[in-house]
Length: 135
Image (cartoon, rainbow, N blue to C red; front, side):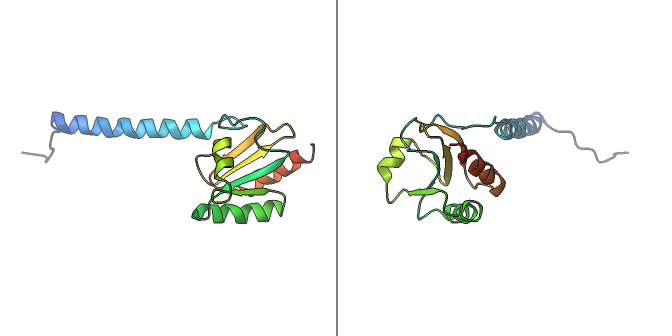
């Protein structure tokens, strides 16, 4: 009497093991990114941006930049400076921006204290605004 079990062949076992390995690597990467310590996640050059201030790097062709601009306006009002690729590509290159949207908090010495690559959240921006008031 057969119970209907089908044994896996060596190729199928290897394929399952490979897929589980890929899932494990992706999960580990997500955990490492989520546990990134506070502070800038990129080695930004010092003194290129004249701070203190919050700088928003954008592009007119970036859909996420439109969303980020709304969050920035709601959280900060006019207390940020936008640098669009189309207006200042040399500034982008000098500063090392490679993704948009990117938002950075810069102190009075031109050092980046924190950054967000992607869509910023209002709570973090409110904290940045408080930090700026110390300069």
